[in-house]
Length: 297
Figure 1 (cartoon, rainbow, N blue to C red):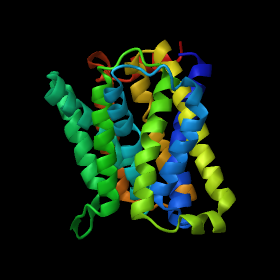
Figure 2 (figure 1 turned 90 degrees about the vertical axis):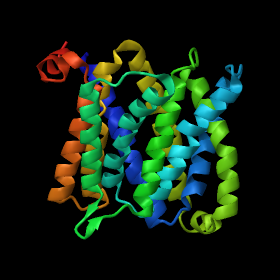
Figure 3 (figure 1 turned 120 degrees about the vertical axis):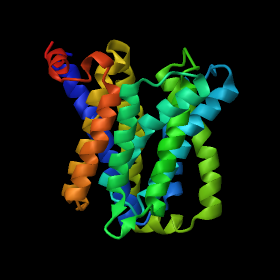
Figure 4 (figure 1 turned 180 degrees about the vertical axis):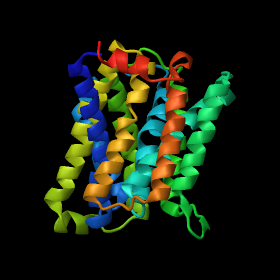
């Protein structure tokens, strides 16, 4: 991978990590209702990608379901989780998405799970459990429960996406936005309050966060990542995507002052090692020299 493309991938990971930090600040510190924030985000994505909405891919019903599972559901849930959960913990617990997608692929698509991936799944789960561990015992609070739900819905959408071919990235983004904005608008109107208050007390902060999440994260970063997928093997890109949770942890400690003690460090290391074992192809799982050599080409 040329240095320029590696720098682009690193920038994408940094942007995605920064999204959790920005969302945490606007939701927990400025009091933005999470579903309202998600609604504004998807409304902006829909507006920006509207020219690519049509012609609608077929079958449309399947596309809308996938768009909901990969858009409104995971983002809405993770935003709700960020109300009470540190971004660094969110970043690690969200890694459950990869083993969940493998398990769902086996259940729904009949795919075989090799022993190496099974070991990686166990390690990922063990690391996440350690991150969620409390000195008084295991505790799965509402915030982390929302994050687990976000990982599960996103994983299900990714599995269903395997059967959807020929959908252009910006067309998919357009339908993710459109499919998400309507149910999220209904939910925030019904379940939340304080929308007007945050717009009155922190209008430019809220708009800046929505612009970052909608324009930089969704339209720019996701589109750039789809471009990298078209040029490189997924088994090269997936291990490098571990830069996202690592950057999230670093930004969380620096900006939102997340606690990062010994237990969190060990749990993060175990979980990310499990993800790496899953992501690396069989011939590379035992060592990193070939991966490093490929980065320098």
